[in-house]
Length: 254
Image (tube, rainbow, N blue to C red; front, side, top):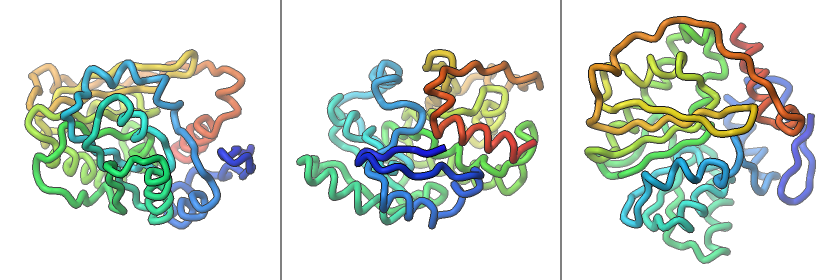
């Protein structure tokens, strides 16, 4: 299966999702690919974001890659936006792209989401789209992920919780279903409440909204193990890299 870049070039999708764990893969990909949107573009979930965004919001995007989400957030009124990515190629390309479009006020930094280089309580909104899913690529049993997976996920979440202001919001857009993600989001380390919804047609993506300082006793109710609901896909979704990523991860974790 190939994917097509914004420039019209075609590149093969990795044969295994393990490639997504390799920083070199991303540097090589971003050196060729102009723009790609994981989990649909902003227009598909914009209605779920707007109620949490104000012109005064300080926003942090984790793993910006070559997405246009920061530009769309800017169009919707956010002016204090910081984007980070582990790939220096993605960061350099994003800086050039934003500068060419006159968006000088969007900050782009090379940084690791496992070690966020920001002070405590400095963002109103932190958002990620598919970035944390990469941490689950080699997680093993989704009901009992490997310790190294949990360690990386918790490092990310603890960093997000730390940099969020009081009553700040973390939005995670993901493949991860609630019976897998809620136990992690509800760890006792965190004070946030956990809500979720979905978008998409037959292939649903999950949008988690975590509100710092608003945890209730309901959040501590354990999640019972159950079978994951079947997923029915449209033809264009079967052809997408999102689907290839999901299938490869499922095969790795069997």
